[in-house]
Image 1 (tube, rainbow, N blue to C red):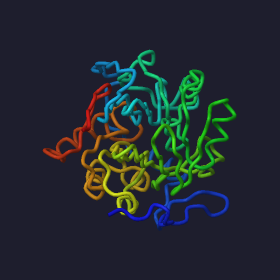
Image 2 (cartoon, helix red, strand yellow):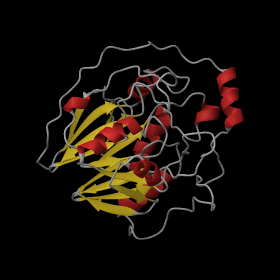
Image 3 (cartoon, one colour):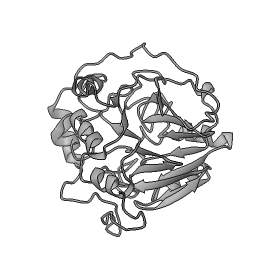
Length: 318
């Protein structure tokens, strides 16, 4: 049985100035970035892959089943009981602060922007450019339909861009929206959008209580004890959205990004009824090829309830 959710079981993660991951392993610093960039050679990938068949989601799903559409990267559309929820939306051509440099899109989004249905809830896991895409958030806010849920410290950026209403959560905090209760839960990662704001805002995953269904969105995370904590507190999710990409080289990426084998272990620890892979196939953010994470997971998870969807792919979770 899950624990009482009011119990403060998540460890301290703020030192008074900056947020931090629990445990001894720290994310790498700027000198390590230079070492990585000048000492390794990325696996070659196509400049662009034209294999996406875009899907058109229904405006609403009124029944109790959960319809899941992988848009791209960590952008997932969840539809159930007339509510539409979107995670880490990105439609921009680059995951970057500028339009002329930074990781470029290798596949188009699996749902065209003009086909996106009304969005009631937007979950943002942290402030990196491949997860917090300001141009797209402005467009969502201009529709006037969405509530935004963000980690602690992130609301100020959205409000400065007239994006809202914004609900800010620490690990262990919750908000009720549209018949869902959304809980902020731990992730092992870091934050920052420039040279001087490292770890000034929090990063997190979310557990969504949606009637009798539990959906876990891990955001961006390394492998760690937090998967056991989350299962202990909430029980096993009906669906887990688990990241599998941006993991090479391991000496640099392992504190903050899981590889496919670790994602599969997380799936098992959570005892998720089903898992869907995210954070792969759209941008090449690390040294492995753009399709290597999916190939590794497919080879590993044969017969398991851990699904790799293409951009635009749909899964119906009973």
